[in-house]
Image (cartoon, rainbow, N blue to C red):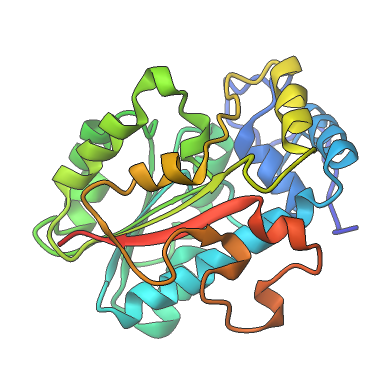
Length: 277
């Protein structure tokens, strides 16, 4: 099992954080083996692992996709990135991957979780051309108007927009298609959009039980799994690049490390990249 540092109350906890309420960002940190999570996050993570033993593999496959897709975008000429729902920093963050290819790449991270933002600020304190915004993804106008975005990103040039493991937290009644149209309209031609999204399509069991675990928690975020066709709709206005919307482990894998030995975990998430004409 990945190493996890269990911390006591916690000089790294930002003021006002309720450590009795689980957080999606801290849950993901726990599943990836990180140490910036609380007992309530670990308890939910352990329940999820019991009903879906491959959850850690799915998280790892998603993280591997992040690296591939950032390198893909850099190869396609993208030099500025907006990572929505960036989470708690771990290895191979977007700015590290992008700037390994071109040191001039610029990155803005966005998350609403106070712990994720606080640790991003620490990591980025001495990093040029990278910043973090505390905001909700459902407020694109506030994100694009933030000082960090205005300073670092030129919206007249193509942007790499990353929404990994994010849109399945947006219920249908919150109009995810309308939300994505707002992001589309704010971006220049040539911008790239990357999405990973959970789906029931390839899961007979497991995901429903995971959704039930989260539903029973106090988390304000609930899973909204969608079909392949519904996820494709989120790319409206973007042209999907080959191989289209496929299982996360099947999107242009560069080697065995990009693919899970548990076949079901390669397709628990759909992954795709679109380009704005």
